[in-house]
Image (cartoon, rainbow, N blue to C red; front, side, top):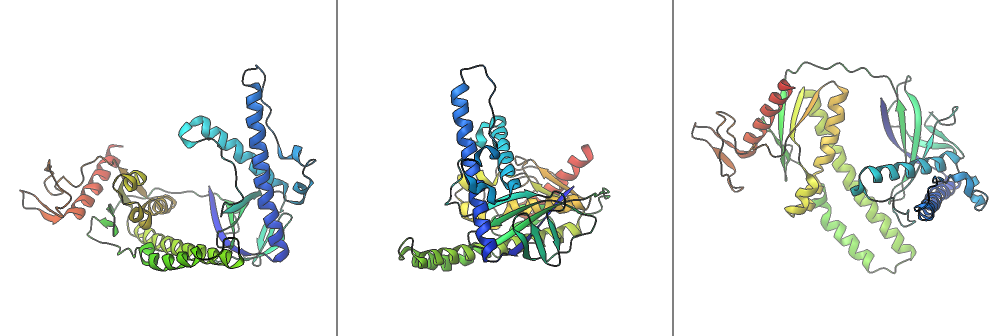
Length: 367
């Protein structure tokens, strides 16, 4: 299995210049190869001849500056372009590979570990061409993990990060299900559990909205292209990153608590993008980060041999009585308390969470 660790790195001035060159060269090679593949296809689409795929090496004569950067970074750009083409032909909705722009706020490149060219020790990360870079290694890595690749990136706020991928042998034993919980998605609370618990989600973006609006107004009054303009843009990007990190930290802690406490977690298989568009809840849906929360739950449970079951989104969890199983044909959104003829009076969302949990248990038993 593979596992990634993301650390912040602190390159010096010379290293920052080389990183900027590498980002630019990777972008240049991608655009050159994409242009050549498009022109090659246009030239032979009516002829019965095989298409030749361009490689980064053929551009180094015309553009000598490509020799200054890591060759594996350019090779990975070629592999990424091939993958983008395969994804496009597999599913046209993904879209045709796009040009890379210098204006893209996120810059990155990937390099591979070959013959010990990449090492991480003593708070220093050794990278090809770049040398040793100071790194904030806030997590310890087991000695039996084998380093495979590193992706170096620069965020819009100007900070540099290294995402290191390790390969390791991991045998997971499936645990017996002794405790289960159902989670019903909630727009304001993130979720409501079958036990009636709510995480009291802080809604980080909503709290930061007023300050972000003030910062954006200051930016709008500055002259575009000036030093103060770019300084203010970095401040805004840094605050956006702070909000995103707060949300991610909260979701990590919530998913870890649930993983430690339960052997099975049941949720609804919701289409969050469609929900944000159809119901005009885009800002609220994006703020609580349900998709990220499900992703964190998924890999944490899998690492511990536990289960994440996704119930079909059309399952009428809100209309079924969790006590007797009777189904209400009509249930408006304004009815927040579920009242059944059998005497069951329960919060609507708690009732739905219990039904989601029971349905997941039934699906697992059937499987």
